[in-house]
Length: 118
Image (cartoon, rainbow, N blue to C red):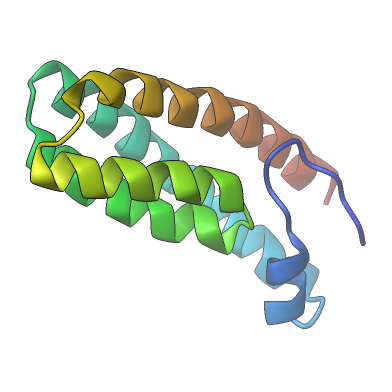
């Protein structure tokens, strides 16, 4: 299939689904349904300085982006998860959250376009 996305790599989904377009579409839709929880949650938790909860949400988001083959974003989220849970490097949280938001926005649109074509 070799669909090119800016950040996501669907090879994992393709191999997991044994090439089933229906399963790929379902996994993408599940991911798209989770995006508002992640984006809104991170913005709110950062603004409210609820760093431990921010770390927990980063952990949850990390699992989802990893399934989409977004390895670099998974690394960003792992950093956010570990530092936020410990209250370390607080000054880095806005940059890490913004990196997540930027990449997820691009990926969200690409995946919506993909679903519209498949």
